[in-house]
Image (cartoon, rainbow, N blue to C red; front, side):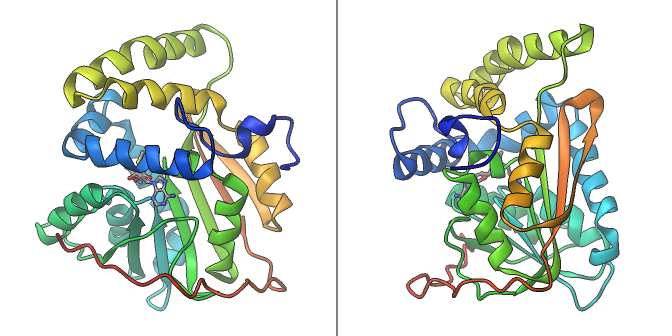
Length: 273
Ligand SMILES: C[S@@+](CC[C@H](N)C(=O)[O-])C[C@H]1O[C@@H](n2cnc3c(N)ncnc32)[C@H](O)[C@@H]1O
């Protein structure tokens, strides 16, 4: 059990009706598969374009690694690829994206092929069972995807396994602002307006109800930092932005930590379609 103030509920995401981890993962995958065609539009619209600012700021914070030509970066839960593109544009590092929703990767590949100045390989794989050897990456990131994992501790351990010693993890996530005028307005918008607009445009009301409820159930930044320390990460910190609505959590893999072996039965599956 995770050593935070939260209950068993915080072990991993549980979309409505999901009774176990496998069920939760399946529902999350189906949901993103369904909303992929409208995902980017709604991201930019519902965040008033702030999602672009948050990803650019994340890339800026991590630029020391990104500017190294020898660095290899994995963007997990990459969806349609926007963080991967922002990371790639910031420097000379090699960037790879991975996600388990095929239709999100189709869109990522279309964007990669279009003139975005960054050809990035996107792989179809589950963040909880990555098809990479131990100590493969200098940086592992996830933007707005970690919260959707069915087991947070397992997710962190898997991220850490594929990270080189002294490598960095960067998790960008929504968080809930404190009570007060702005916090109360934000909650009204996030819980009442966003699900209606998102549901109407995407045609999937449940997906845009899931967003605020999953954020409400998710760790506060200090709780996620505690979990990151629990799995052995060092120099853990959270930078909280935009009135307490998002946070970038970072941590470094200890030099002494070796990972467990990569799963043998998982094969690379490049999603070019
Ligand atoms: C909210 S989207 C974020 C996409 C992108 N990172 C961005 O910034 O827009 C969450 C993504 O996480 C992916 N995801 C959730 N759980 C996953 C898992 N276990 N393995 C791989 N991808 C996962 C979903 O398929 C979805 O594309």
